[in-house]
Image 1 (cartoon, rainbow, N blue to C red):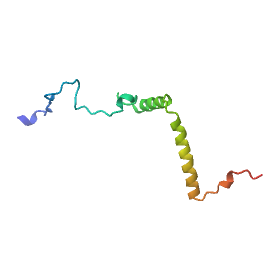
Image 2: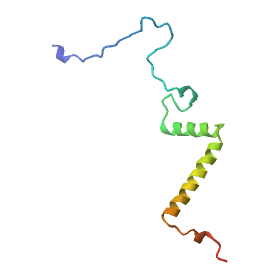
Image 3: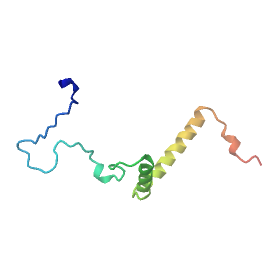
Image 4: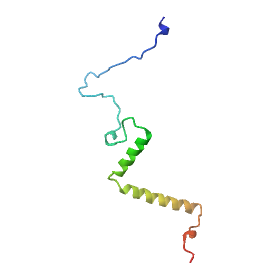
Amino acid sequence: MGFLKKRTNKKFDYTPRYYKGEGNPFKINHKFDEFRTTVGGKKDLKEKFKSAFEESENSENRGFNKTIVIIIVILVFLFLYIIDFDLSIFKNPF
């Protein structure tokens, strides 16, 4: 009556013959995982956003935000030019 038994998965504990290191040589890691604080651990979505925000506040790369703002402003003005938006409404009429 083998059809009533619950099937168990086979487990393999393979180690390469000439491997002399520690840990699993087949473990796949991203090359930047050790530098990130948001990777690892089972956190909920709110904790991930909170830690990512704290990491961005403590970042040494503060000039990046200025570059993004400049690019966004240029793209907005380019969009307004393409749709023929009249920018004279922002001038002082007096």
